[in-house]
Length: 451
Image 1 (tube, rainbow, N blue to C red):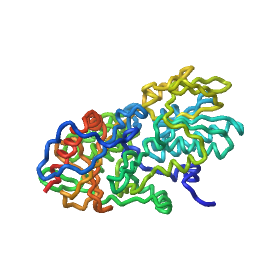
Image 2 (spheres, helix red, strand yellow):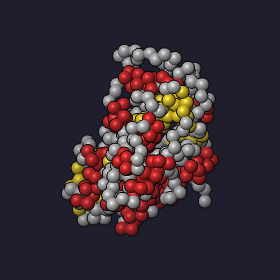
Image 3 (cartoon, one colour):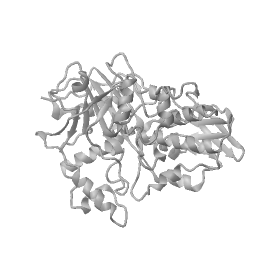
Image 4 (cartoon, rainbow, N blue to C red):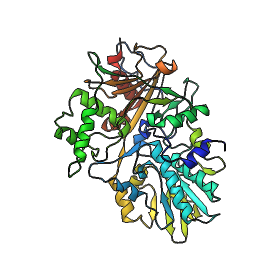
């Protein structure tokens, strides 16, 4: 059988992607950055970039955040409760519903495969199924159910497919700007090989460099954090990662530890004080690879032959034991036999979709208990490099800056591109800045890397 991207998503499970949706971060409808109302404050040794793009996941009305996270005191089974079907009419998918690897592309794909199984168990051939959301989870469900002879319609609020996978191509950039999920871990080697066979390449993003104001410093050892987590998981009650470090005799405010926790926030979407030590996020670990090419075909090919309605936000879902009614933002209502909801957790928390009758208490409790993390990125392109390091990932230690983690694309691609990634409360603050302020924050954060 010929392996296609559609086949990959249809059969995806534990061997799929572990790309962090956290690396994640973007505009629902990216447009060229407006001309700033004033010139940004110059930074000595750092030229103004020739092009820039930034994400706005935090304020994106179709996500309200980048990835889900598990707050202190919330059990892993909460995600399974969120995923629980309602009356064999409503089904739920998306990374937030995956108990094993939430916040990852692998979790999103696996959740779609799980929801497809649940629908197939109760549906008859020819039934009409609505899928809300055209991201990885929605595309996985759609591919599976279309292959099972069900009449599938996908509704996507944005004017594009992909959800939180978002590659932006622009003639002013030499490569796609990845405003969504684009970083791959070592566990994704099999997927990366398949992607390369389809001419969707990745680039190696090693080594890392830890930089203090006075110069390069020793890499931060994650072992104390790992030991603190292990100790906390043996305790009778869940505590935050911050408290776990304190209980283990470590100082979360130590510059090196704070730098490590800031890096963790770029994938978790939340600060250590918010994160559960019993169910912590995956700790970032080398080697890391980044997408070199447009990732949209991963979703596009899965949706080949499936009816997709773009710019179609859903305002109301009514359901009973005979079927479901989907009301669009335009007021039009359509009838279906089943509905699969794959919208981000943030949309459910904001109650932008009215459920009639209200969702069962177990689902609503899960929605309220989980956290929606904030992650933002900014891509900067320079005519000439001002930096002289070949390290691909930079971490700032001991400096009070807005963005502590940077990806240097020059060693792998030859392009003078730096990508800043920020998570947690710092991401929320960054998202509140206007374009000029955001650029100033980014350039000030790069000051210690200038000659």
